Length: 274
Image (cartoon, rainbow, N blue to C red; front, side, top):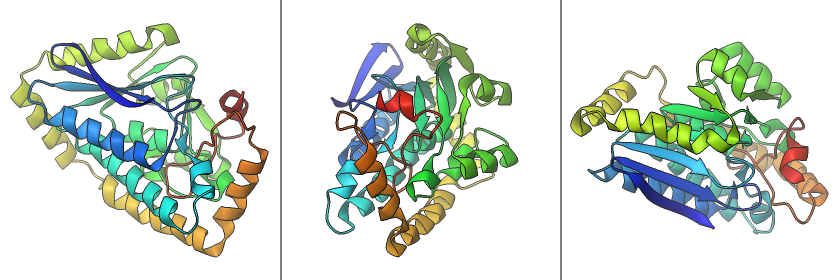
């Protein structure tokens, strides 16, 4: 359990996240993920990183139970900073990052894949931000990198999810494959990238980030301020308490990409809690 790195072949690092049962990451988990991504990108032998996850879904965000059992704002601030660090690590990784997404990709998952360079998804993958259902805000910055502006707003306001095939039609998902083929498909793309000159691929990553029209770090930090305001007003706690009290004891609490976590949306919550 945790975050691990492997090297299946020359030039490729595979980072696997494993926090059963739904990959709702604790505070330390976000920092561990950031550290692993940065280390892989700094390795001169690595020319492409594959970010994947074990289990039923790619990522369900922050662990709400950890937050609700912690007095004060310590866990809240930790999740705030941890998510920021993990998202920035993916975006700033010195080499391209390919996200391999299966099942649910919610809240913090959107922050990760929205900052990745390419996405390969299984045909059962769903993507969304259920933040408002849990009194949270955040990661609209990253969802806006996956879908057009008006669709992003509608998905955000309703907490609905989009399928991998829908994102493929919008051009943000490179390829959709059966789940059992997911890792192979992601490594196949990574292999094609890793075949390039290592120095040039690093220059290319820096150049592409340099012409990005939106500063994703600054815009996400701006969103986090509104999430903290929701916490200070008591709105976020009310929604998180309701979620924790209704969640089955066998299921971890899933959350949002921001310091106030949100659960899987109504469209996918049965899958995440079963």
